[in-house]
Image (cartoon, rainbow, N blue to C red; front, side, top):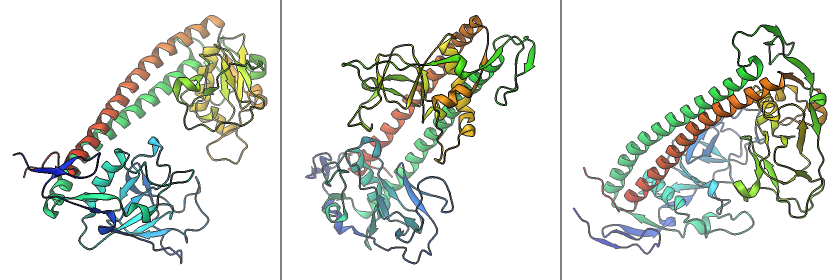
Length: 418
């Protein structure tokens, strides 16, 4: 049945059912300001990808404060909004609905529902506002931050209460189904990623011949290796390069997925740019690059471009097969070997200086075996990465469908049929 519609007065919303109202957010919500001044509340909550989740208040990792006295006490059905970085697409899903009493950082805006406000519907509505970039023109300052005094003027649309409840129940069911599919895909990606790591580990330490005679390597992460393989220190395996920079060189980054390429080939945003390029070095296609800070996480690869890189990058040559060496070093990263060798104090970090790389023991098959291993792993990893890419595409499709579904029902473009 076709409903009578009217113009909402909101450009991205368009027409809404004629029985729906429009009012400013301040009619439905006030700002909850309830400091945890006595530090007695310990149920720590955080906004993560559009959901309010519990965090361990006793955790020693990450950037946690010495005291939670400045945190804000919130209640069930409060809506929490991250108010900063409004222009950053990566910060979407900046709204969450609290299901319980707890504390959140006072950096968030917390909306307390007024007596007759049904928060679950408005949470879905504000989610659509977020996806539609409705917050983008709000706020000011370097980080594009908004506050409640500005947010309360935001025009919201309000169906009759019975319809709000019907929309919310429908979306709860549908979104739970989609979230289940997303969780399954995420689990499959993690399984494929671990499978890829296991293939690399097995191949760079055992080779391709299952009948090869084995010997103890004396290296904890390699255990036994083919008897005819050699072992030598990194300083005898690698040559540290220091090429000059050319005037037209673009900046090369070594990413955590192992790709070493010009920033312009991936993205230009989200990087910290140096005002002065002290110590930059030239990089050529085919150079082996090990990130001095992120190598522990897999930032190890072969450059596909000519450009310049920061001094934190170890740019290496070798008389051995560099693709084999890349896989060998990645295996060490995946097995947390670099972290175990770290003497730093930063959490999940490791200083992979040239001095440290020089002391690492490298397992070296004969050069022809290195080539065969590299070719085998290229093929295997490419196939696995294609599976992962397909699943990531499915995830993006499901997320887009979920956002579209929410938008269509919270704006009345579609009606819940009871």
